[in-house]
Length: 528
Image (cartoon, rainbow, N blue to C red):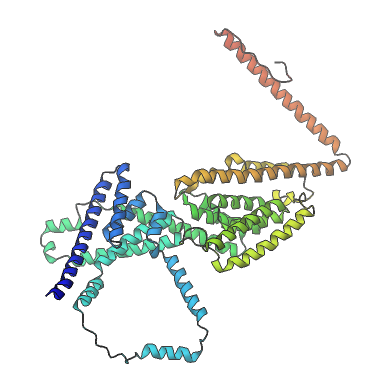
């Protein structure tokens, strides 16, 4: 009796432990829901802590997971939502499947026709050598039937897809967000169809019941409208991005720049990662079109939004090298080298696991060797004295031998466009996933724009000196230039004198109306 009583006692204890944990999880979830219903900021952290405790006891408890994901979404903590539900992100799934398939294909060296034929025969003809007896399980059959009905499963997938789709949209993963939101909408419509089919005939007995069914008393949900508007906005952005990339690949760089400018200067704000990606693509289009200053500016904005963007550092380094600005190019190459070394040290690409990259981890050693060679080459050129030979004509978009009027016009446009005071204006059209990053983004944008602005000013002074020397070498040009400058100075003094006389008249009028002291107007070099 003692031998038989011990297993039953263990089963009772195990069952009691499971029941107590279940009650505790339900209690935590109920308390968290009550705290969140109060809409007070002090209770939100307590509610999330309760949900974490519930998920620690039961990691697959659906109400707790749904409540926590919804709370994090309303708190705009999109990164935590993506980390929580990253197994459902389509691009991450595809990358994992591709990596596993590539590793299997690389490990298997024998892949001839005979082996594939034998594998097909193995799949078609099952092995009957195993004669072990398998008992029929009624509980397993019940689980399969319940899972086959799929009502609860569709509800689980529905909230996961909708919440994760909104989080991916705010994180800049537009393709994943579109796939997830469309899947959530399909599941919602399928659930609505099943509910309408399952209505009994008694509900259609009277006209009053018919009225209550056709016109429900509960108001329509606004979440559906929000998701529809969000999905249409995502489709518009992806359509413009696809058109811009296609025109760039076709060699129509001006058209590609126009499409990316529509995305950047749109009415609605664009997520941070997606905006950085659009700036990066537009910088490449500017580079192909030969517009150096615009390309450098877009690279600066990309690095302000995403400091670990390897493509922006590579493109800006090549742009500086194109205009023989070797010191800045060498600085970007050194930054790239440090970034590659940190990737090899940490054995992971920068950013979260669900962040898309244009390269793989296996490409880093080769890139590091090529960058080391470029750094040695440019150091030799700097040591040889090639620092001061910057091509300022290419930077300002001018041809050699241009006139003074064209130079002043180009300089005016560049200073108005790339003034450091306007360097943070693009941040107003950016939607940040974390508001704490705004100050650091502004600082990086100001610093990079200030460096470019100083380079443009230095280029203007150098090119102006060359243009004046060329004009002085031409006969009969110096006299016209000096007379023109004298006329401009005389006009300026005349306008200043008229302005000062008007101020003196206004001051006398004000003194006559009751002011104790007349207004004294003084201007440098003039007596008013």
